[in-house]
Length: 129
Image 1 (cartoon, rainbow, N blue to C red):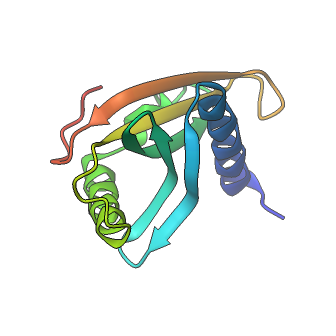
Image 2: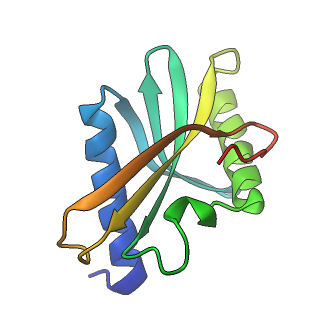
Image 3: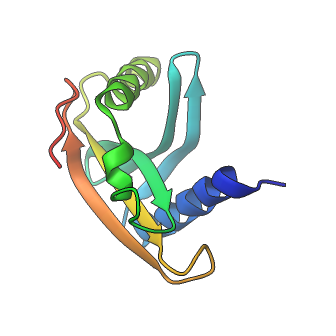
């Protein structure tokens, strides 16, 4: 059984997945893991492959969830995404990097605040938020 931060992360990912599906995204993979790192969600939105990093918090005390997607984390996601595209023979397919920030204001049982940041960073790891 997951506790603490891992339980919060898992609930954040479940919440983000449901949110994206309600917006018309088709989820291709969850927790795509390689020796280079992991991507929380890989989805299709129209003709684009979308690599999604999910961040969840219970308050804004330490800043918004998306602030924890560091440049280092962005570079890791980009490396894994390139490997995914290569493995799936999708190198010529349009893609983007989104962040879903989930804040559970009243704890994990409260109504979450969800923020989808499309094109949150580019393939060179330049933050757009």
